[in-house]
Length: 138
Image (cartoon, rainbow, N blue to C red; front, side, top):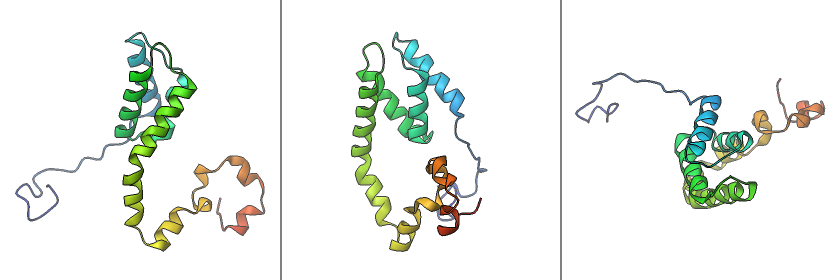
């Protein structure tokens, strides 16, 4: 609407970059909101939610809402994993749609774990022979 020359509000505003909400603040927010309704969630589970959703607001909100709705007193691991699994299955169609927008080369590049060292356990990089083999730069 604001970046298309064919639209009436083209360039009528400035762009504002919004960073992700800090993990610490998100964690406090989740725990506080559970506690305010006499329900509890551990810091560990709140961190897991934040990490699993990548602090993407939509997914964090949806997942927390579902976990909250299913929780009687306290969040447990089975409940958390079940809610995560259901959300993932519901969104699967959308995720596959994104995949279909990529060329085979783009998909293979994204699917190559050696290009995403932050998603691999640090022990993976303890073996120095892996680094030159996969052309990983430190």
